[in-house]
Image 1 (tube, rainbow, N blue to C red):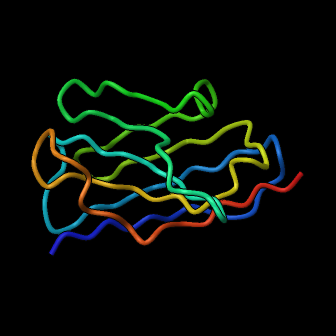
Image 2 (image 1 turned 120 degrees about the horizontal axis):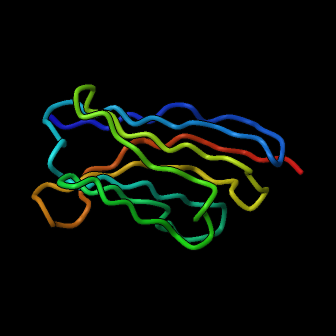
Length: 119
């Protein structure tokens, strides 16, 4: 059974930093894209960042570009999201996601980790 478990969320002041992690179990995602998404209260889930499996190319939402960095450790089957210069509007539940097949849609989701940024 595939599981994605996020950790690292918390309460931080504006301008601060947090590092989220997502540990995958049940299969290896090393050659697959992995993504981070977030959902703020009353809003739809939105894309934050993605890292490709082959080549490791990264993609970011405009709202986080230059502040967030996605990375992965394939030995640990773990994906990270380093978040710097956090803003109150970054407050949300953050989810990691993985596909079932290479190039396919995200079908595996973690339970989410809460990030709260105070002003």
